[in-house]
Image (cartoon, rainbow, N blue to C red):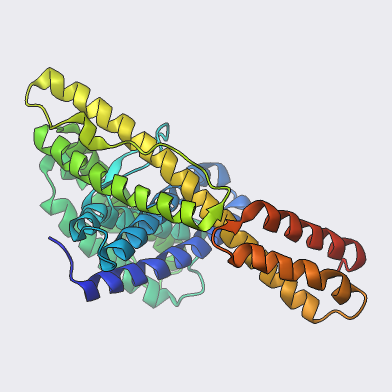
Amino acid sequence: MVPEDGVTDHYLSELARWRIHRDHELRALDALTRTHADREDLNADITFSMTLWHSIVQRHDLLLSTWQDTKEGTGQREWVARLIWGVLELPDGDGQALAIALPEALRLSDALAASLRARVRGDDELPLKERLSATQQDLLRVRAEVEAADPAVGGRLTERLVAADELAAELTPTSDDALGRLGQLESATALLERDLIIARTSAVHARADAGQAQDERDHLVARGEAVRSLAERVLNTLRPAPRLGIPDVTALGEVPTDENDLAAYVANLERVGRALDQAHTTYAAALAEYADLVDRAERLGRTLAGCGAPTSVDLAGMLTATKQSLHNRPADIQRASALVASQEAYLGQLRPDA
């Protein structure tokens, strides 16, 4: 199903706000974790949360690029839907790596963040009654999802769900240990939701078949087009620009029906996926470097506006040259980088407070 234009614009806008909020939240949780007594136990979830956030951000970037092409008439609307509902691969080598769609990844990120907040008491500023009510609603939702899940998935979580229900039933806002027990309930509920998402996704992934391989192929086609669009944007915007080959998944042919051929085909799909990941990371990093230079140049401009002679005289020409280098198309990244670094070094020597 292809979303309507207004719905897509709203979704991408809300996702942009979500990624900024989650970035700030994870940074704050990371800072709290570093001084927490259980920091060693918390580190794994912090690392996984940041890895998941990074994967979501990369998918959002591809969606923005693809949607822009679609509105300009050079992309296909179907690719947007495939990028939303196609699997979002977490990096290989991660002990908790799994393939999930973007909506599931967002829910998993929310569950992880809720678990971390509860474990480091990041929500202590909220009224106890408000926290208890919100946690009870979360528990009701998780219970419904566990009961609706396949028995092979939900059955493993039933005992923990019963324990959480008992804890919720015993908890009252006026009890002496209400705050501590609420923290236990928040953590138990969030971990239940996290483990349910992971178990459900892993079960689906284990039942790989020709249909799933076809879905993955279609998804990689959409990802490939999105990465090509990103690469074209970089090549037209920056100089020097990275130049990587972007694999064409259609070169693998159609999905085979033979079981042995299917296993080899899926392995080839995974290799194509990793190559697309590498290309995406490289081109996204080039744009990030450009954005960083623009930001640093703007900060230099604000600093220079408050400087008198001779600093303003010395740097005015260099700042003008920097802006020209960045605003030209393609932008001269090497020249701009050297100019920005020189101005920052100058100010660092003569105005250490700048």
